[in-house]
Amino acid sequence: MTYVIIGAGPAGVVAAETLAKTDPGSDIVLLGGEGDPPYSRMAIPYVLTGIIDHGGTHLRKTAGHYDALGITYRQGRAAGIDVKGRKVALEDGGAQAYDTLLIATGASPIKPPVPGLDRPGVHHCWTLDDCREIEKLAQKGAEVVLMGAGFIGCIILEALVERGVKLTVVEALDRMVPRMMNETAGTLIKDWCQAKGIKVHTSTKVTEVAEKDGRLAVVMDNGEAAAADLVVVAAGVKSNIGFIDGTGMKAEQGILVDEFLRTSVDGIYAAGDCAQGPDFGGGFNVHAIQPTSTEHGRFAALNMAGKVTPYKGSLQMNVLDTAGLISTSFGDWEGGKGTESAEALDRDRFKYLRLNFKDDVLVGALSLGRTDHMGVLRGLIQNRTPLGLWKARLMDDPHRIMEAYVAHAYA
Image (cartoon, rainbow, N blue to C red; front, side, top):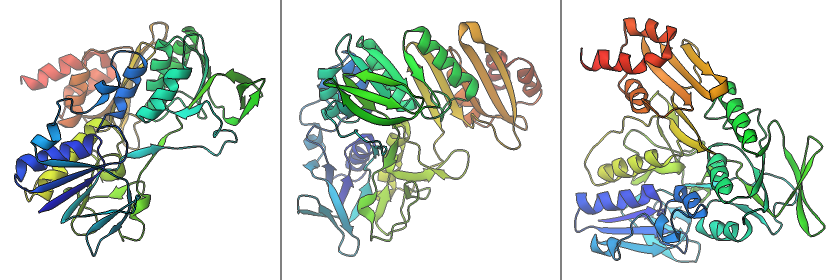
């Protein structure tokens, strides 16, 4: 049996290791598209802050790790898939045969249609090569413009602040971290950043990155412009699935997979940021977070090896540190039709807690400025714990979440 995994990020590496343990003696080929060994993109900001070096991003640091497990690591990018002949066509003209295939190609940063983004000094912060360029330009005192204040943008923001740059943030939507925080929390994060000396423009779009007097000039639709030594583009990501054209594989935002991580084509599975898989709350979504990627990789590998293991779905969750302000969101943090919400806000201390209920079950939560009881929030949501009388008590005072947990855990 020859297993081939396209993509050497967290999903691909965990899948390869799981296959090596589950089906020893099989041939396992891990295809990576970059020159560096398999690494975690989420570790790149820690390189920029100096906490780790480039090698610290590597997913496995022991020399010979993959060889010892019987995993063949091969550099190459997929250009297409011959589903009848069971071969992966590579961009360099080569090919890789497979019996069972896992697509774990992750995502790529979106490049908005803004004139001037091809100028020197404009970079994404997505690969180790990007990191190397940013390290050169984001020196202490440098003027930097960050396009985008979503989850990834705010992780980059934290690293840039640590490097001592003069930072301007431009976000097209009406608040920071709009897909993780509601208006109240997103506005508080903006206020926090501005109090730290960061210039933040929300409801604002960059219309052009021009050149003026030998430097970059970032022009905005609010009539302002910001000089920059570096522009970092963090305008979202999209699944890497273009190479599946012509395969008949079903896809929307990502490759559609079932509870066994199988695609609509026989013998092909998908995992991680490129997969649109089961959601804990129902439905099928792309959850571009590393915990989901590693879960996908493990479950996909078990099913590929014949160990039928259904995946119950990933819980939408995010934890973020924005210039020292911690924010979290779990599950249905927005609250939709049929839900009730309770809030506690201390604007002066940048503290906020929102709980969303469906009947007497906690289905989502978001918090700002606190780190206590986050595991409790996650546990109550994932366990779908009926809260009974405690639902009314939490509606009156959301801070009593630990009491509610203890009351049901030891009932």
